[in-house]
Length: 338
Image 1: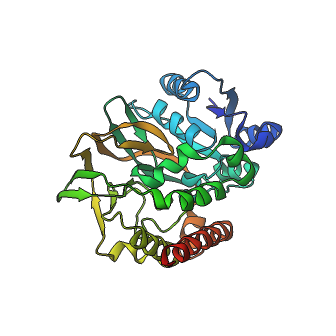
Image 2: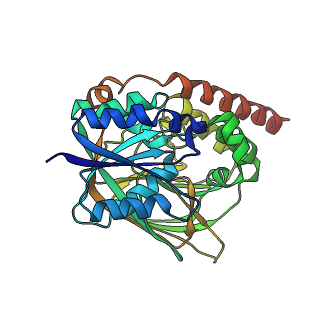
């Protein structure tokens, strides 16, 4: 009996190039031994999530999520509550594709991404669960709060389409002068942090917003979040930390950064001030927020050979975007000195 696969795709992702390549993509999974069908997401809320839930309950062997990080997040949320779950494959066609970058899945060739199924290589990935005032959901890459997380809300859709993830870098530089003071209480496995914070990251991979050095020592599937708290709201100090992050990842040793491995995080404010929680690039409710770990919860199709080979290599497009961001940061530093 042949295995069954369901491709769940976002028709607006990838500037609609994805739709034109669907026959070739589906053919790769057919050649790999899967009876493959496709589902086009609709404007209905959680369309991808509902379809992934249905396919998981119906016993599909493989779900293919084709779209950006938002589509992948929905598919992960449809699959994760179940005891028996299919494998997950990813065709990245969004703006930043952080998750695909972390897993070394080809991000600019949809058919090549589909062809990974022929390698029969998978990785068991940790999944996080977050509960806020209004939400209870799973996430696969990042939970965050603070000024830079506002970037995902402030970048207009047409700017994302024209400039891709560069739009986030440019907008991030513009937001730096607006850093505010939010007194927080962050509880984690080994302790509690109480004080101001301009940024809080609860990361499952090393790739966030196009940066690949947020958590330079991250081991995928290790059952631990990387908790990063930037303990300053000083404009000049934040600029220096960002420069260190982009240059060599030394931000992890900076005295103004708390950098911990933990399986649990609770984030809350100390003065009832609003603290928005960003989950995989989208608004996920307000603090208080509790993050719990689901170790090696999903089996995901990837290229293990490329993951090993790319440990010490750099993504050229990411370098170009970081250079643009550095340029904007330097301009801000010059203004600060004036």
